[in-house]
Image (cartoon, rainbow, N blue to C red):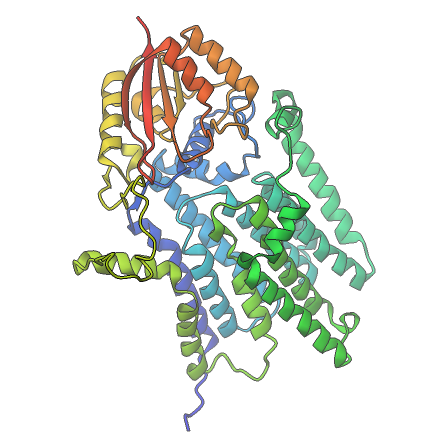
Length: 537
């Protein structure tokens, strides 16, 4: 028989810190390929960092909460891609801290808390190297819920401050992305209602409601005169919702939602089991019911968000750690602080969630050991049962190289893209009052060439057709092109997307401007390209 050996709380806490810092700091020492849509994070942060005001100087169909932290890091470290990585490392660090606080609020013991933090790092932190609004919205929600739960469970002298802080971060969540932010608001409201029922007091509800309303007014009122409602898709075609009843039912009942259904079924079974044993919900203490409400909400939220925020799919994987800890915490017979349990449990978590780190291990091992997997279509197997699409580009980004341009200091791009950017920088650098329409995924050229991005309340931050670039903007841009108002225009063509950049603008360019250059866009598949237009003589 093994002798029982219990790890000290200090040792376990040190392990938790080491896990968190390991996952948070890792991206700072790695070079990444340029990622699609990453230009949105860079450009919004850059515009704010040079003093442009959202909605006044540029429009966008969401609030500017997403760019606050990246803009701060641009101010501190310069408008570099490495600054974005530092910003995300900061966000990841605070996210792990929030998870720690939430588990501690629910009195999760240190060993189980560390197991939960490891799972959160593997399933959420590890896959988010760059800032993106689909997970920044959840970061603000985590901040809000850590303050809110601490206030509701512990009360104490900072009760009012915590409620107000929760309302601020719930607002920033909504002001980053409306769908998930709205679900975060509903979850926060549910937790406050549970507290109000148990304490027979609406004090918390009133404080939260009033502070949320005041904060919303303070943020939004100054923006109303700058087409704020327009940019949120009110009053112009096409105006529609991403949610339909049939689509929602499809999302709930298709194979991608199997894990959600299993989790919800397990929670339901647990509630019924407690009820059968005379422990109905009304007999639970408030902390237990808050933990149940929180866990239910954190599962239901991504189930719905799959429909409204479908790219990338793994941005919703934050719920696993909370569900795991909720159920493991109910098993009172397991002493997680035992060496014989704690160490194997950490290893099992790595085995339970290997898909993300395995991709990198496989790539590094194949490269360092010079291992190649040959595919022989004479044999039928997992990789050969279906013939490859002969028209599909074959690049896997392995031939991408580091860019010499300062703003792209920590990323790799296609050689053709880098050469195209260098030609632009060489020709247009330091030309005074250069007016550039940059409809491409390379906004870093503003800093490299030295021009200021176009300003104006009718100027969109990006040019996604019928998402942030509507018919009014198309007409305005085509008129400006016809009048020769731009000294340089970059237009990106992406065949696989549904007219992402409006073809009508390209037609205006082809009619009124000269096609000066064409080079590869930093995308996979590598069939997209950037056209460079200059005015006709």
